Image (cartoon, rainbow, N blue to C red; front, side):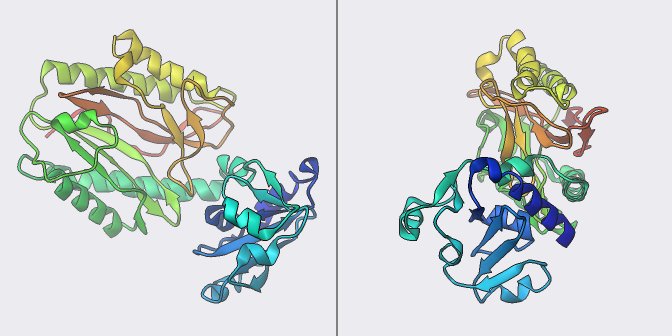
Length: 345
């Protein structure tokens, strides 16, 4: 992907003249990886307005830089090796201590690389497609293990192990398995609570494949669902469908959120859906853009994003359904394809 990384650096360089800086020092490790291909725990890259770049890292990673097609300097203090008066910096990532240490004359900039990362190239989308396919298959493979008597923690570990077996480099994030009343907590941490007949069980998980993160959520029923469980499941499914169908280049983040949120609010459950509708995915599990009632900006073509409405009833349980999709001119591409019909196990 050397040519790809060069194109990304050129795109960043093109943003610098209007910021009146000759170069930008990129210190976010995720952004360094995006621009150079180097995945490390200590690196920075200086990208100049003419498109040239210098990568700094320490001795542990020098061998990994041989074929990156960029000038490299070896330095434990990577930011210090590249900073100069007038250089732009990533204000959202550099600490105050580092900023002060590097001296006067640095120019704090808004997130520029994150802006570029929002729209993915087809190579990135293919990596996400693979991550999502692994996640789909893992869920299908372990569904028979979601049974009364198993614990939330056991199901989470089995699911994560299966994703690794299927080719994931690691999990995209710590998996959520929330049974019964725990399903009312959107980011519940799995416990030793045993699954029981009559539970709704929410599983939120994803594979990380070559740095790219899948994200999906399915809610299943252990035994035939009660009337209230079926009601909120069908409601969330309808809201999720409305959110997916609203995804399109040119549509605002708020409009997509409203399409799904309005379905839930119209059924009298507005207070039971209190988080944003979704977020971008890529080299990070949560990245721009974000879908929510107060979010601004319009979606573009080729933006991978989640749609994940939920209804959470304190003391009872909850339902969340989430897919990863990619905005396309002809309609969104669905990457997580496991059925969203309520599975009765």
